[in-house]
Length: 236
Image 1 (cartoon, rainbow, N blue to C red):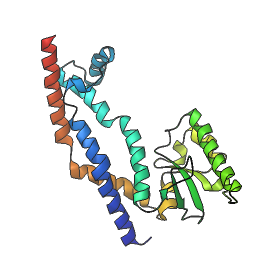
Image 2 (spheres, helix red, strand yellow):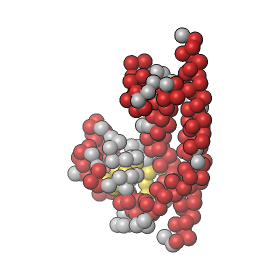
Image 3 (cartoon, rainbow, N blue to C red):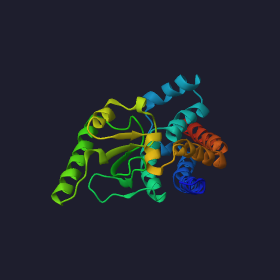
Image 4 (cartoon, helix red, strand yellow):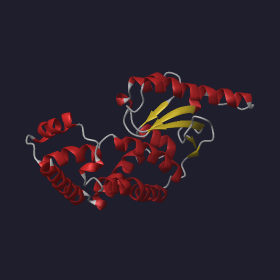
């Protein structure tokens, strides 16, 4: 990959991240200005407010509601879906028609064609997923054999978009005993052929956040939610 090609890929990645993931994140956070937008656990809400901020005020209650929603685990699922779209939009892979596979790509390290299940991070699967992933790989290999084709076990891989090998959960390590798990820079190098693409992609996404600068919006949303919480408290 030339430097010009790399810049073009990173520009495409930034535009896609801004126009889909970041825009939706901004819009969803901005919409959290009413108490009706939340399913509140009354046992935990006041506790979490006191735990995090030390004082039970409408403003702190609003923060205790908005911060987890804006920065929390709900982003993980949408991020995983986004990364699959990104890989395909970058034209480094394409959607797989093989059952159980997310993408296919030609490995820039060993030159072999890979059938890949794409995962977000090093702790994003559970025990049951291990059997599911291995079954999908075995089925793909057996189907190919039935059709007179050959897929080696080394060509059925899990691509983990971020993290390091040292951070991989035991569930991923069980898969790695039979099928390669490429994580973080390993995955992106094999996908793009560039040893630094992973770090550059992280920085590109951070630049999108800097461009958007949503801090004022978050503060404004907190104030609006606090006012709504106060109004509801006065009605009770």
